[in-house]
Image (cartoon, rainbow, N blue to C red; front, side, top):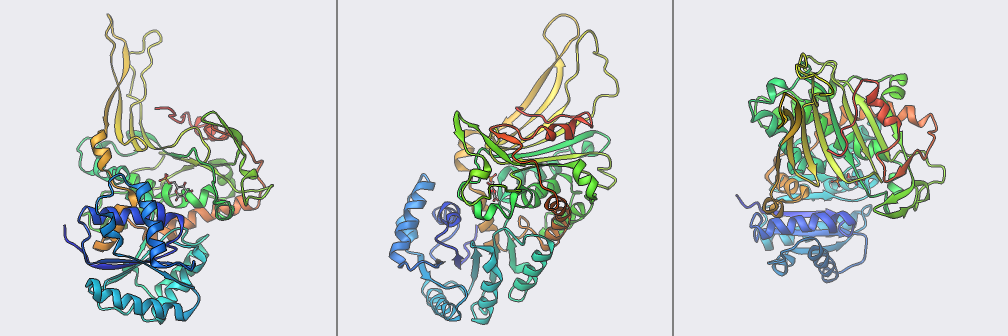
Length: 489
Ligand code: BG6
């Protein structure tokens, strides 16, 4: 691998994401020699801290998040802090001078990566100032990583996009969707396009339905302020869930070139059938958690959480049925589900195949089980294929068997965090695993319709107990079509 000199400036550097994910990831890249001496990181934050104070904070959080801290002290020499007021021009002048100093001290070739890990209302202000202060006028590359949420609906996303495009070109903007950095999410594409046995079956002739679930045990934690205006639909469905749908449903790209992959993703996202009001009510189910038991302990209801309204209408769960109007998928429902305070933490894709044309083994009570391809994304990472085979008894009865691959403990030790993959991709200038504006546009368009219907109508919340699989209605969503969620598989 090639070392890439760069100055990384992180806005929101004292925040949670930066402590839990960004610094541990950048440190790991450094430790693994994917970054070398030619790297410097400026943490930018409101707090009036010194570099020493910041280093000691970062050091202790890195120690908490990585096992092997070899080279950590050395890495810390590359970390700096600047106390900053995002809406004050002089702060950016200071930052410019500081950046130029570090550039010559660490020989960074003028490469600059700006990482916005802060409250989204400041995204546009920061990018405007980055330009007007001269920070983006540099002889090397300039790139912007931007955290979600990217807008709150299509109109605000468009507004924000226009604003940041004043300072950065589309190819310089890297919109993070951390699911795209997960190893098993990246594996969906490999599984489909590197094996001869799946792609011929990957269509409405052989697949009856596809299920994508991301369930969490955690509640809203201390993010009530943000979550109240977001909810499961905008926090998870618009981005992570629809990105997984795109990877599962897209046509084979003509190459792995980022533009070729993206074109296919955009195309399939645009083929999702838009809903009208009555279809939203039929095909989408929202939920909000009540009190309940998680791992033996009583937990609060969502409405009792910090910074949440007592009569909050915000969904913490969403399940939906999507139809994709193209030759490949016509008639195959994609069932999507995500929620907080559910039974278990798990991200899983299940592809259910149609039945054989006739069941030769239908004697007495012998039922054939459905053929399933299960892709486990988290916490287990692996695949399994559910088949029918002969039972080891006289006569011909069948029994379900599984072919499974699961990532070894050894490999697991070496897996890198999604953020590490993505930060490194950005340094290389590879935007394949980031969200392009056209993808955002298509997903917001779809989601806005649902949100509008829900905004106009107060839900009978809370409607599921913490520690369960969500509201009963989410089961009915499948049963009307003769399917069920493959839970506990
Ligand atoms: C984030 C959401 O994008 O994804 C969180 O804002 C959610 O609310 C998280 O908890 C889930 O990510 P993961 O990787 O744990 O599935």
